[in-house]
Image 1: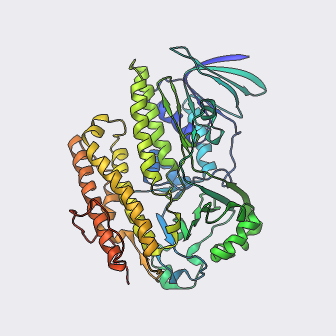
Image 2: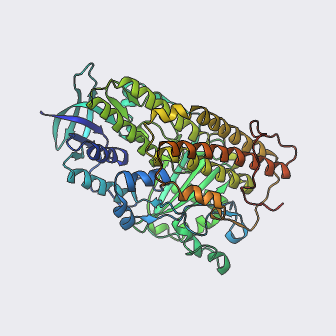
Length: 529
């Protein structure tokens, strides 16, 4: 039995684990890292993992923090933003409400083929001189007390091995190695399921109708590059293109409104699509012979009681928490978690007590998680309402870009003084967001149904486009505080404007406390009555 010693052993060499290894080596050039991954490389293209759509924080983490920009531009797809169609039972996309941009937003995001990306990351980890053992099976993890090394036992190349390490990080996804060891699993009250499959062909939504005017609403006419959401009450269907030439198709649904048993085989999923999204069914049905895979996941959303420890262990990625794929936050939270883990290891290497920092960083991480969770929990019933849901999407984006993105893009995740200085503002905007999510539910319950033939272009909202365009602005300490405080004021005004607009259509709807003194600036689309 061989024995090795490392500074960090990472359990799991998927996206979270490989990214953490690269980030650690960039931050600490001499650090000794060993990554143990159960799957053998190279991984299959297209039919590997979901989590293929990136948004601003995840894209920033990949292209700027990790320096993967050249690979992303060469091997993956430059995303045409999010796009939403309220198309239940419809085959005439030009005659339903579409929410999406005509021109791509300034901050690049990407559609990711996870097999291509993780193969590249594995090569980069090895090129950087770290140990990446694919085909390794973890057998046990023994956590030590005091300053003693932790001990990981694993099988590799037909032999039993032992790796000793000062730090152990669980990035093994739903294998949940440390979560199970320490009994940390926790429900988050979001009962949702998903099924997905990949078709070895491009699903070019721009060609799904003959209306040339509609096709050319976008410039270039490439809606297929978007993460396309085809929405109805209680569910949404994703269409995501992959750089390998395949297309990812998924159904995500509220478990009570659309039970998993109605779609947990490919044939069942196709029958479900035939009823609820017939255009997707038609395009997939004619390509049945190009089916690459089919998978489903029950109750995919989960929390965790603890992810960072002063005893020199951590949990990152899906091994810890997972929200919902609707706004593609998975890669965001990988980047945030890995950044906190790097900071903890830095404190340890400097001789600082780690326990207090682990507690502070975990509080911040869980606060980001809970605030983001509120965008999904109990909200799926709204997904078929073109007016309410389109307004909610604008709000959710503004909240994301205006607050969390500012903290991440300005490299302030570990700036405890900033969080202390802005505590009142951050707490008030968190409460405002919770109030708005409840307001959207009340509004949807009273809103008369409408689904007009209109394209709602977020890029035509100057304040909205500016929020995106200025994410990379270099800001000093004072300017960061001024920017976030200004964005909190903007969100108060936006909330007041949303409430005022909703009450025009539904005078009986109850307003929202805390917006009375705000100026209800007309910051939104004008929805026709």
